Image 1 (cartoon, rainbow, N blue to C red):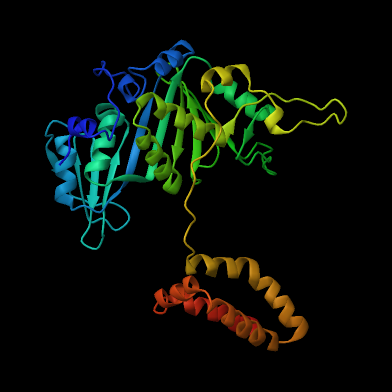
Image 2 (image 1 turned 90 degrees about the vertical axis):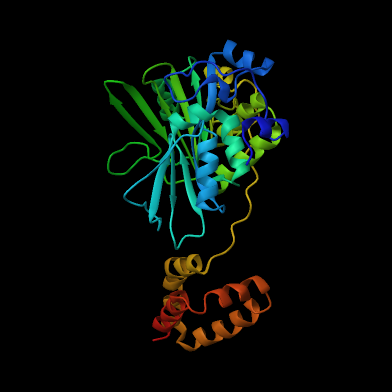
Length: 369
């Protein structure tokens, strides 16, 4: 089993300066701002630190191997098994230090969740060592965070409402409330929080100022979380990890001034709009690009949903207009086309004993009737 020292020696993760005292925010400077000129530039610009604040995914290793690795990385912390399991078919669960682990007799994997305080203890180097030792990737969730004095939640929200933003976020007004769909605000005695985007999507950003400077936190899920983590590990440099994460953040959310064309009087293209000053200072010249996502493998269940939602109404209309014979013609033509594609045939073989096939037949039969 690899520990942090051996992983560094193997060149798997970058090596920074000795760990400073933990902050009260869940991430310490060791997570990415130590030991580099780039780190000093970020500090001078008002970014006090960046780091990972949540890491969750699954490992194919045995639960024994996972618990041993988690314990070893936390000074042999004891494992405390819980009386209950966890959602998703995990019948057993345990805590080791601040790390949550779940497994089940019917599950082929072990779920590992490293929340904020445990991320503070491990830092990005520790998380990297754990990732390598038990082949763990953040397939469920990866949060990357920055603390900064350059902005506040209100500043970010005001820019979003004013349209001074280029974002992959639905900004249409809710017809019932008139509020923008992609914006949510919450306040309490600790401070303000602004959420931008949808919590259910693969990318989501929040700004909050509880207990200190503003935190900018990007939450990634599934493919995007895995690919960004792989990219960060491949860089072998702690300071570069932060710039890579900033590039992903800018791809999702970029605050830019509104500039009107001299002749048209309409806003110019996004690429021609300059960054807002406070945002330019925050991103510090980071590129605006996203990780390359692997193409999702098609699933018969998704085809079923698409068929019901998109095709069924049109098919019913065509059948009513031309008669049920058209369904047989479509099936004959479609069958000859999909049988020439091995990937589609494989889907059929995998699903022969599932209800999905019945669902397809049900929709088509209803259309024919």
